[in-house]
Each structure stands twice: as C-alpha cells, then as structure tokens.
Amino acid sequence: MRLAHVLDSLALAIELGLGVPAQTVQRTAVIAARLARAADHDDEDVVAAYYTAILCYVGCTTTSHDVSQAVDELGLGDLLVVTDDEFLPEMERMLAATMPPADAGAAARTMAAWFSRPEMGQHHRNHCEAAELMAKRLELGPRVVGGLTHAYERWDGMSTQQLAAGEGISLPMRVVHVAWQVGQESITRGPAEIAQRLRLRAGRSLDPTLARLVADDIGHFLAGLDEGDLGQQLLDAEPGDPILLSGGEVDRALTCIADFGDLKSPHMIGHSRRVADVAQRAARAASMSPADVDLVCRAALVHDVGRVGVQSSLLAKPGPLSRAEHERIRLHSYFTERIFAASPVLAPVGALGAAHHERLDGSGYHRGLQSSGLSAAARLLAAANTWCSLTETRPHRQAMTESEACNALGAQVREGLLDRNAADAVTTSVGQRGTWTRRAAAITLTEREIDVLRLVAREHTNPSIAEALGISPKTVERHVTHIYQKIGVSSRAGAAIHALESGLM
Image 1 (cartoon, rainbow, N blue to C red):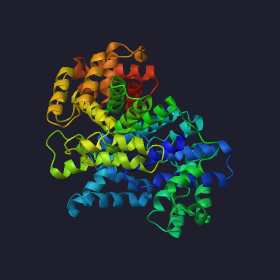
Image 2 (image 1 turned 120 degrees about the horizontal axis):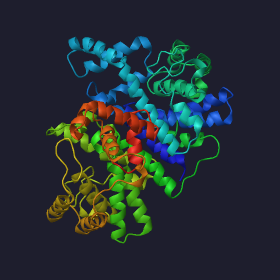
Image 3 (image 1 turned 60 degrees about the vertical axis):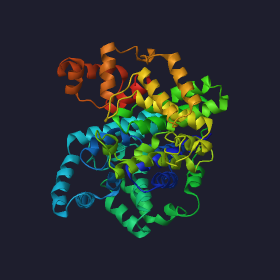
C-alpha cells in the first residue's frame, strides 16, 4: 500500500474537520509540488512541500471541543483564506446564519477579539504539535516535521505564536501557505481574482516571491485541477519514489487516522484504538482467517473518523438529542465510508468500518442493513464497538462496569440487535484480558502523574483535576509541568497523543 493512498483518505477527513470544500487538500498538495519545482527548490524540499500540504491542518481536531463553545468549528475553514480586511465581515456573515442580523455585528467583534487573545496561540500550538507528532510517526523526516511547526506563521511576523517571520519560516511551509490560498480559493473564484488576491497578500501573510510567481502564471498552477480524478492527480504528483507500507506500517498509518478522529472529542480519546484491540482479539477468538483479522482490526481503527464532520457541540451534548441532531450524528458512519470510498486499496476497510452501528433487525445506520446483508466481520465489529462504548463514560451517562456491559451485550443479542456468536467472541476476549492496565511505556511517570496526564488529555482544567484527585491546583500545575518535561511535549494535544501511544487512555 502506498502512503499516498492513506494520506488521500486522511485529506478528505481533514477537509471535513475544517469545514472546507471537498478536495481542497488534494488541490493544495498538487499546487505545492508544482510551485516548489517552479521555484527551483531542491528535490527534498519538493517532497517536503507535498507532504506538508497534506498534513498542514491535521491537528485541527485537537481544539474542536474548546472552539465549539464559542462558535461552530466547522465554519472556520472559510477564515483560512480571508484577507486581513475581510476577517471581521466574514465572521459577521458566519454568525448571521445562526442569530439575528442585528446581533451578529457585536458578536463578530467579540469573536474577533477572542481570536486575537494569547490563548489562540496555544490553540495553534496544539494544532502544530499534533501535526508534528503524526508526521514523526509516519517517518516523513525533519523538513516536514519542522515545517508543520510554522503552519500559522506569517511573512510579516503578525502571527499568534510569532515563532518566525520572513525567510525564517520553513521553506516548504512558505510554499504551502501560497498553495493553500490558491487551492481553496480555486473552488469558488476565477484565476484572475485569485492572482489579484495573491498580490494583495504578498509581503503580508505570504512570501512575496512565491506569491508573485504563482500570480504571474496562475494558469499553469491551476491547469487540469477541474478535470478527471483529482485523487489520482494527487498520487501522480507525489514527488520522488512512492513511500510503500506493509504490515505494521499500514496499521501505524491507520492509527494516525484513528487518533485524528478521536481527538475531536475529549471523551472519545483512545476509543478507536480500544475497539481495534477488542475486535482483533475477538476475531482471533472466533477463529477468523489472518486476513479477516487484519481487516477487522483496521476497520475498527478508522470506524469513527467520520465524527470529524459532526459539530463538537452535538458530540458533547449531555441531554437528549432532537431528531435533527440525531440525524446529524448518524451521518458520521456515512462520512467514514465516503472518506475511503475513492481508494481501491482502502475502500473495503472504510465500508466495514462504517457498518459499526448496523443491527441485525435493520434498525441500525447508516444503511439500515439486516442480518442477511451483514458479514461476520461487520457483526463482530458492531459487538466490539458496543462493548467498548458501554464501558466508557459519555456526556449523557457514566461508564458501565465490564460485567454490566457484558450483560447489556447479552440483552441486545436477545432483542435481535447483535449477533450471538460475535457477542460471545467479544466477551470471551475481554474476559481473557481482564481489566485495562497501565503499560510499561509510561514507566517514566509516577502513578499520580499518570492520573494527571489522563485528565489533561481529556481537556480537564487544573481546578477540575485538583478536585478529582483531592490535591491543590498548584500541585496539579507542578505535575503538568513535570509531565510535559518528561515526555517532551508543550501542549495538551501533545500530551494526549503521548498518552495514546503509551496505552494510557
């Protein structure tokens, strides 16, 4: 399997999470490769620009929950390509869709002030560090990792983090900054207007040399993007030798997608990894073939990535959902299937993953399949996901004990919802494991630091951690500082990913 196949699917998920038009990321990566070559950059920078373009905003889900408390995070993608003068009017337009126009202006000014707060720099740091860590896991090299650090920097230095300016910004990321503007705007604007807007941004948010290079030959950089299969164009544009994955490398890449999806909601962190673990052991307990065991495990890893296309406010709602809200949440399994549908390699994985809410009597979603349309693998995945969900806390309920969840699983079998053999395989596999334990990977942390880390990963504040653990906020602050130093991260997103990698969630 080519890494580019995985990244093509991840690109669609990123677009859902940002709320930008479909195929924005693919366009951006193709344009970035063209621009790096046109600017006579060396081969390594061309490669870095291509992969950096795909992963630039892969950390966007790490702050979705926080941002959703102020605004619909799925509407913020439009702000990525506005000029400085357009920011406030665009924010007012977004808010006018959800409130009386008379109130939208004041709300927009409040939101603009919110976006200029120092805390916004920490939001961007979360995005960048998550992207850096995922690029490291994919072994994409220091030029990609280093470039992702500068995702939100500006040529004029007027950025939230102010880490670099001008030529101090990573060269591949400077290419991506220009390519993203062109890629996203090319879906709704004509070439002449895009060129004009690039010249307006030159020397402000964008590298003036690169911006003018594209503006002066805009037709070359947009050529063919609206013709044929853009996913295939993305694969064809991959510079250098294709990166090939096999065995555990495929699982590692799909785990990145799993984490990207789970980071959308604090209460879901680690869920997909856990379902994959239970499903894999249950598939073995059911004597499935090695190929089917792999398929079930990989489908379980990606089964919930479609959640990135659902507002965080709905995913975190503690009370009953309206019918409209429930229908919106039900779309997440459809999104999962569509994210992988265009890939001949990953389509079977996405199709199986999307079946995790199907039920034998046809009452599930999104296809409403009945028993005759559900494979053994789909039945097992549904049982594994149900058991894991029942034993995890959700905004509207507390977690069940393992024995209570097994009883609930049995009740759903008797009601004709879940397959008996699949449920038996799941309960057998979790019985063999017993309770979830802390793994040796976290040996550098004390027991108390592990407690703190797990709560930090779920976006608890220092006061709430202090209350939960019966210690003072000052003590929590010292623990967090020591934890970050020990594990080598600087943001909550980095801490969450470390906790996931260490098996602590």
